Image 1: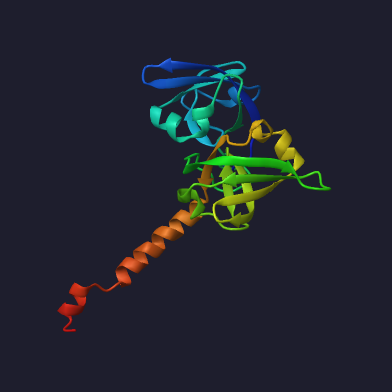
Image 2: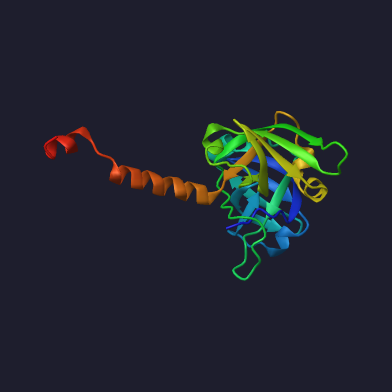
Length: 214
């Protein structure tokens, strides 16, 4: 489990075809020191398995499904990626519950400075499968970053970004039109499932009404 607090920004140095998978090599200063082979690591919001760990780098294999259904579809050598190691059992919970399971890919509309402010607005177009779980002032993970929704207008989501987040994540490297990995709030998914279960139990069908003599 992750919390959406980015620990460092890595850089893709190599993309190779390994059978049906693609293997990426990520250069990073700190993460390789704590990773072991087979350990989980969040790479721009995608939970991957660390392989071939060396001082200053590690590799991870991307299945065709992962490649096609995440923002890795735009990845290239030199691209910046957000890195987070799994949360320790005795660690602080700094963001919100993030699993590293991408629910959908959004599209960057713009990252723009707020007038007369040092902060920024990030505008993202959400796919329907993520928009339905998104609420104003709720949490959402974008490229593995725990963020709070400022406004939601249909499928356009706007988030306020402080200078620290712009500087120490890959947000500053994204351009309008770029895809971005999105993970909806896990709690919203459980609430939806419980509501559906309760509705199914309480709903009456024509057959049930006939059986009861109506």
